[in-house]
Image 1 (cartoon, helix red, strand yellow):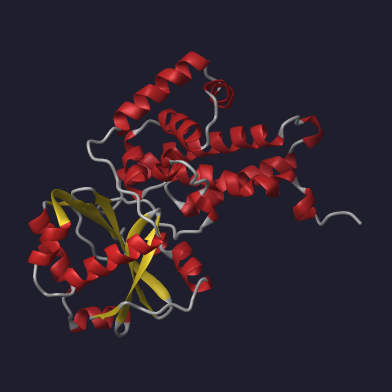
Image 2 (cartoon, one colour; image 1 turned 45 degrees about the vertical axis):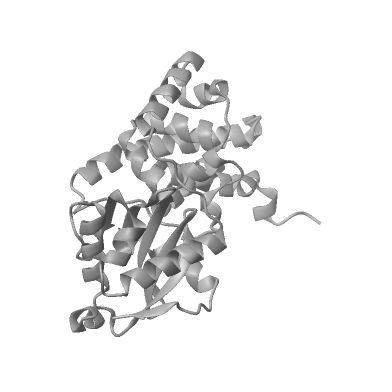
Length: 314
């Protein structure tokens, strides 16, 4: 009995890997899905009998589609309203890809995806393919139509651009939950001091509301300013209740490998507050409230439910 088309088609064997590459390249699940779909259409429009290695062919096509998207994304982000942050993904989402090594886990963290915006398209492609997927420089050179020596130089340059002075502390699900519980207890206390103690002195807070949801348009720097900002965010108010149609619930989750607090109401995720733990404390707080970037995580959260909230908000 022949296999169903979706099982017989080699594309489906590689779809998850292609999605993971595209997400790291673009920082957007929606854009990654579009790129993979375009690769799928090209796969079915070509003479597949002449393709000796489907995975290599698909990776090359997808990478070049992502490079084209990155060029247009740079133009869009020049006019983006407020701060741009990557689209957050819930633990277990196949788009997060391999997580066997520290490099693979780091490459999909929200902090690293944000830093990768500094890179040129070629630098980002080389870094992602080398660090997250272990491609040899020779293979990357074939994908990008470059020389092997050029790829090695680009890789060194990308790593230098992404070098940070503080190592991220890796956490498991239990540790992430404890971190979120401690964070929410401090945030809901009504006092800034408990939050200040959790944050590093040079912590950075960033919020992304796009052009839909009102959010602070400049970063907040320093433990005390961030604590004051968060205290205002968590302070109850009739306007906030009206905005979400009632009370919102707070949940603990792991998002892009880091502890996060999810804000939900009416079956939707309204916001993701991601924490970047370090040995000295929480070094960054990223708040994603742009609804366009919360559609996938809302679907994943609903599919994994039901969920018992840690607390009610507003």
